[in-house]
Amino acid sequence: MSKESDAIAQIEESYEYMLAYAAQGRSSEGAGADGASIRNFLDNFMLSANVLEDWVSTLTDLNSEVKAEFLRASKLIKGLIDTVLKKTNISSELVDNMNALMATRHYLTLIFFLDKSCLD
Picture 1 (spheres, rainbow, N blue to C red):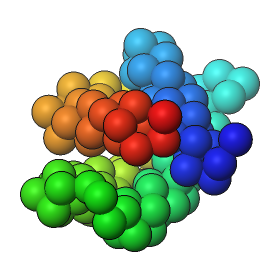
Picture 2: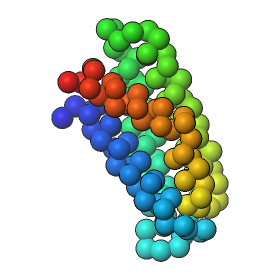
Picture 3: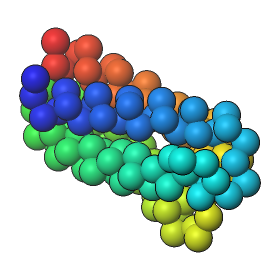
């Protein structure tokens, strides 16, 4: 498995955790046994997004508009995650709102496209 495939898998795992966290209805991040884990998953998402940015930047056969759109989407999702990580408390509602953003879904769909079009 390539580092790009690993990064995609890590983002998928992080997003699955984000969905589960959002569904828990936590008002306080520390509530429950794994409350603080949300920060670890968000950090892993960010690190993996950096790996994918570096990879996409080097793809010579990827359409320039697709490349530019992915890099814009990546910077936006990282900005959203950074904003959430700066909060002293990460509630389920906040993560749910981030999950629901079209920007989040757009980024994930671009990753799935790149996975099938550039890694297969």
